[in-house]
Length: 79
Figure 1 (spheres, helix red, strand yellow):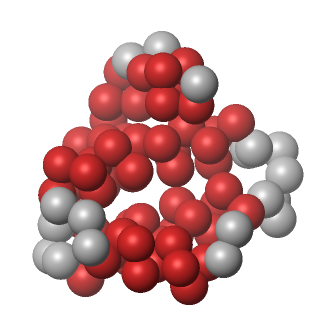
Figure 2 (cartoon, helix red, strand yellow; figure 1 turned 135 degrees about the vertical axis):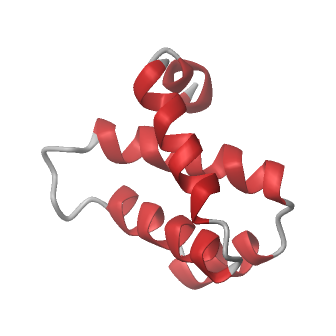
Figure 3 (cartoon, one colour; figure 1 turned 90 degrees about the vertical axis):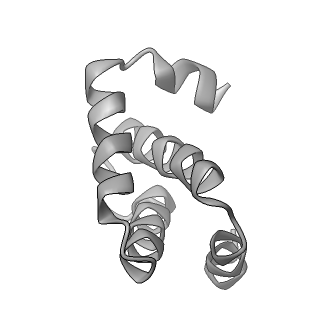
């Protein structure tokens, strides 16, 4: 995936859509936890950076909390 295109896409998302992307990227990153150079980790960094750019770091935190409390959410997001 082209990371620059992904970053541009993130900037155009509404907060609700970004929340879903954050959850999806968290799930992908967790799925590749044993692979430190997996692209999913870079994507997760980009969604965090977008949340920070908007001043909505709490959005990232809420998505992370949801995935941790309800890990089954990843099944639907990664299907």
